[in-house]
Image 1 (cartoon, each protein chain N blue to C red):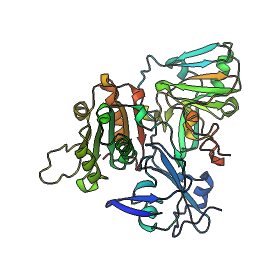
Image 2: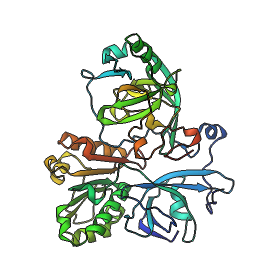
Image 3: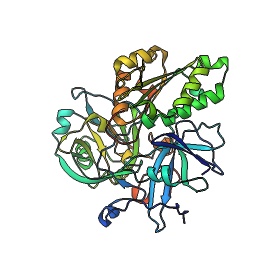
Image 4: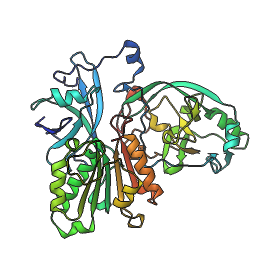
Length: 206
Length: 242
């Protein structure tokens, strides 16, 4: 049992809010920006998106080709490892399921792990099972408008059931891997999987 | 909790004795967890202000008027209390002597805290030596008013005793009589004046409210600095640049 902080009361939320907050999180109405470095700026004219298979096969789309794929819209809560959670965020993009099935038609087969690779060099790893079955998309609209660069535009990965560092900003490629490899933050002490409901923030957390 | 030091009207430094502390690097932070009697918990992160050379851990906390944790840390906690914390955390926004220089630090408001750990570390290791001239440092620090400048006197003492350290303030809302320094938000012209040219490859650390960090980081890249050498940390209340 952790020690009691003498005189601490805290700010109690409604039962509804409390039930939506994973352990250690607080609700914000802002949309904080956290990045390790400067915001990359990529023009849509040069942007492309790649799905690369472990066998080296690739499928690639220009911006126009990518955004012509069937869209989905999702409303979801998001949870950042820096402790803030934001409820009811609205995103529009291409489901990773759609990307994978389009790529399968071009000969790219599945593998159990995925590395998201991004402009500016950011990477994050996630099991394939965590980005399929409707759990993830590559989003290019937030709250009804084009995703701004500081929030990851032109497009970011969205994997809202994991801590938001997995929702890689400025994503350009999903690279399928036969074995798991840690990405940027995972190599710097953050948890390899990152389930907010089990408070898996840092390496070594159960 | 050993001591609480008032830095400015809204900031306090908590000086802590942490048995078994494994050591840390300048720029890292800790996660603080508070537990109420009924088990309710709140967690927040705070940058470490003390350098790795200090025996005690210092956290400098800005009291947010609508904060849940910072008012407790600033006003309720006193010497003798215990604080539950976890760390050190952070492996990217860190600087130590081997990382080299020149070292360019750009901060706004409470963003000064991890940058101060870096300056204190530099001073602790290089001290009054000739070495420090090979690793010069500059701090560009944006605050609203002179009485809100955190670590103001210590920064003045460090700069005065160290010709290889330059501290430049900008006061964006109010300036004292006779102020001859900058009076505006950090912009491209100011950065061109203060930053080393990209050819010098300064290690750059930018910390503060998001609008300041976003603007400074983008401008430095526009000026030709390699993005990989510009490290950013954004925290504090979102919106409202200093």
